[in-house]
Image: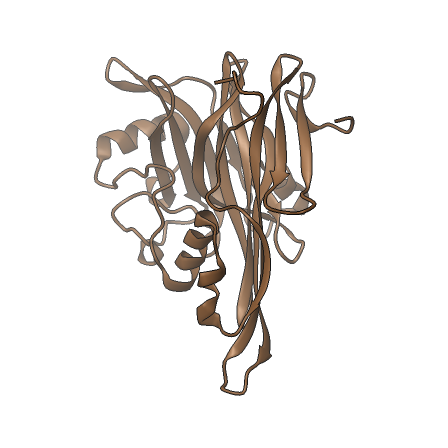
Length: 307
């Protein structure tokens, strides 16, 4: 994989930096040329189902549900669980995803009532989000490493510092730091070195405005280090704005659209035994670009100021 001088670890479809004004709301979707943004926009505007990004487990699959809950959250009340996911990763290993709320899951609002596929703090309050690497041995699910778990206080008790400590925090369009809504796993081959592979968790934030809205997405890479699943890098992956503008004589309203996407590339250069990672804005005359290098003391990637 590393014979090329500079190869992409993830390819985002039709990535771009784009700004345009359209005559009316029904023309907005035609100006979205990114599959990632288009899927989220179509879901928000029309309720169109998105692909299952976590491999959600059926609610009636009692054996799998009980086994994963026992591994990931044995003290959690089953009624409070929104997401249980299981996706094949590498070899015999799978990525398990788990999300629970402070209160019982409100299934009447769920898009899919037959599966544990809900992990959103729009209506309910997160109590726990967990990601883990698991594998089957002798027909039983077992942990391959210590899981990564974030536990949340109630909204009344939670502080901004609590939010910032989470691997899933990001700033929304208003500049407020929020807990993002987990969107999907990114299982592109993020090979950090010969022995260490990472996977991504993408999560989004949304802000609604009169006649429009804005959304942005970030991604955290996770890797198993010293027997523990740890976050090693967090980057922005896209920003999208659809803001209502001037009224037209026929009663329709113009919309100002702006969008930017970013990709990650694995560099052939290494720092402290880990490949550098390049984050780059796409299709821009003067693209933003940053290089992240491995820092052993912090056990994560940090932006390099010298490259």
